Image 1 (cartoon, rainbow, N blue to C red):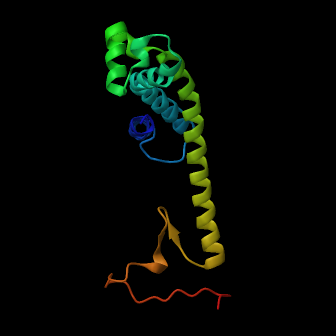
Image 2 (image 1 turned 90 degrees about the vertical axis):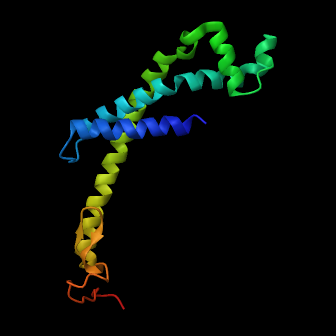
Image 3 (image 1 turned 135 degrees about the vertical axis):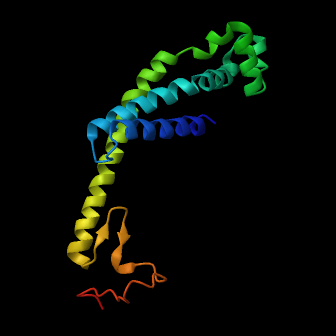
Amino acid sequence: MMSVPFTAVQFTVYEHVKKILNPTREYSPVTHMIAGGVAGGVAAGVTTPLDVAKTLLQTRGTSKDPEIRRVGGMVDAIRIIWKRDGFKGFGRGISPRVLTHMPSNALCWLSYEFFSEYILTWFISTAHSYLGITIYRGCYLRDFAYPIDSKAPPHRPHFSGLA
């Protein structure tokens, strides 16, 4: 339940911040770290109310409060938080949550973008060196062009050394 809204916010914010910081879309570790950290912090902040309600549900079995022990689901948990603490209750723990998500997401996006760039670069150079084909950014293979393209001359890829 928590991962879908968190991930939706995280990906959306990451892409927007990355586009603002790096409009050329070149590989930039600093951009990926900043965008990842901001995205993680925003996603953590936005989903904190759901996390507070989820925590109440998870701890209801050990609670001595009979009202909390009778909570039947998310709606009941939200109702109790609102009744007892108001709007402020939904923000409990927001600071530590944001502060823990920011660095972890910054490192996650940094490593994802690094390996994504590294693997793509390696694949392009390996495919060109060993297979004799040309690969463009986005892994479009020129030698395996779309067959309906009538302007392209017929081409049969040849791989030397392969049967």
